[in-house]
Length: 280
Picture (tube, rainbow, N blue to C red):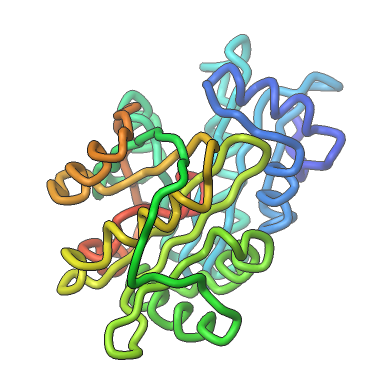
C-alpha cells in the first residue's frame, strides 16, 4: 500500500466514494478542502487502485481530521488505520498536539483504538433556504472581519483565521454579524456549491442568544434561498433545537466529537452551529 497526497486527478474517485456515504461533493468543494491543507490530505493506493482518503486542516496547535472514506471492498484490511496514522504523523510535524475529529457513533471503537476519546455529541440537521425577513443583523463587512476572528478564536479555542477568511472571501453574501452597542456578539457563515450549502459556524455569546441567535439563522436561511442547507449543532440545546424545528429543519443523525490528547476546546455554550464535520 502506498499513501500520497491527494491530487485533482483523484477527485472523481472521491466524489463517487463520498456519494456511497450520502456525502455530496463537487469538484469545487474538494478543491476548497484540499486548498486548506494540500500537504495534509492523503489517498491510499494499491498499485493503480485507489482505496480510500483522509483530509486534515490545522489551526495552530489544533488539528482536525475529516473525510476518512475507504472503499467497502478494502475495509478491515488496515487502510483506514494507516490513513489516520498518516494524518496524525502529518499533524505532529506541524506541531499539532490537540487532534480532533467528528465520527458516527458506530465508528467510536475504531477511533478509541487509535487513542481518541469522546467529548460531545452533535446533531446533524437538514433544511432548505427561503426568502425570510431578519433584523438586527447585517452582512459581515471587510472592516469587521478582524473583530470576528478575535471572537472566534476565543469561542472556538484556536485560530481559524485562514478558514474563515477564505469563507468570507468566497461567500461574502452568506456571512452575517450581530452587534450589541457596536460590539460584535455573534456571526454566521456558509459555504458550498451548486444547490447544497453548509451553514456554519453559527456563534452567539450566551447572554445575547435569546435576542440574536434566531436572527442570525434567519439571515443565513434568507441568503441561501432554495438551497439545501446542512447544519450541525451541539446536542441538548433546547432553544436551538426548537428554533430549527420552527424553520423545518429535519434531524439526520448524531455524530460524536472525539479528541486525542489535549483538552476540550473553547466555549461550547456559544457555538450553535459548527463550521463543518471536516473542519471543526
